[in-house]
Image (tube, rainbow, N blue to C red; front, side):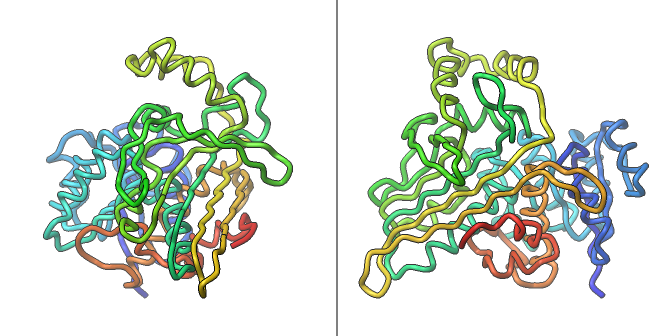
Length: 364
């Protein structure tokens, strides 16, 4: 049996779930690396191998990664280039969850001529949503539009924003403040965040959607020349976008991200009762007829092997581990840069980890 040694850098909530899922598989040996002793202790108490190391020190990190087949970064986005470089030095395949465009560009540069694979943006959005989008696009003879929308939301919203923190605050602010890549009239464009507001409904619940950064990954570049418009929007409950515009634009907090982060983390409670909605729609021609196809997936927090996991933990961890499994079994290129759109949806869902999405699949 082919057993891979995996190093996870980052012992936060997502890193904990990734480690737990890998620990339960016969195909992997896992070590979680972090500087935070408290986070590591929680994992060690559950029987997972841990190693305390300063992940900000290039030499220390490269030594810690030696002997591993693959490295998964579950660390903050600003450490991405450093961890990817250390993985390259260690001769390991590299995977991460970043939505940050600049960090991904650095990984792409490291992948040039590499003997191992570099696959960033492997979580939910970017990540699984790109796989779903590419699968929809492939169902048309001629693709016209592809709209990808994802929401990580509280099941029971109570405040004016109708939002609770469910994942990285830094990543959330990046999405709200950074430029958004899209295809517009067949050309790559940088759109403003919080624009192109639209409304939709699913299962009796109303949502609003608007531009945010990073969710498309490299899909827009891949579909250039094949589609007229490709876009990514974040889903929220109605009213969220108007308050964000007031905070970011009217009060100028887009220029004071540290203060915005402090406000979010002080005022918005975290919740483990959440829902993740993936809502993708494509239009184009098939057999000479204009058609529309949709993929909708709704995942809620639930118990897995007797432990409660949030929807964002489940969807993010499943997103990255399914592609790791496909790399291990030889179904993805083993060197250079690998994009999410190179993953076949059927292969993804057939892995032991991709199957975690199946209970939440509404239609396809």
